Image 1 (cartoon, one colour):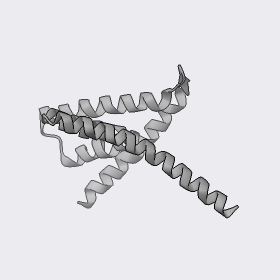
Image 2 (cartoon, one colour):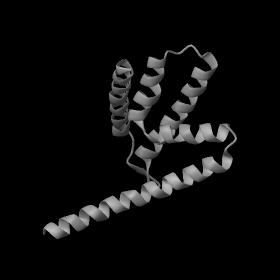
Image 3 (cartoon, helix red, strand yellow):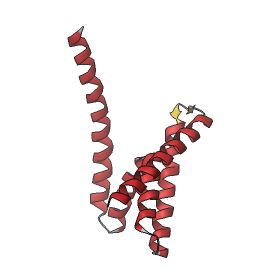
Length: 129
């Protein structure tokens, strides 16, 4: 069990470094879209789909390698890839409504949470001033 955490941590560190490296060479915005994050999310989702299918097809990938690549590297590269995996697994199992509900709810609640966090900190700073 402890070795899984080491593999996830190592993969996560490398994934985060890869994200920063890729984002440094990309333009910040293309057609007013934050291109760096958009491209990293697309790439991460593509890679998690590719790796998930490859691991299912070949089946002989060690659990440590799965942890390193999926939860570690791609989790550090972009957490959106983990979200896409959960959505994809629900959809592939035939739970189409649940998958769509999960996606819509995740996007809406996460964006609302972002703004709630901003507002709480702004109110706290105003209170201290």
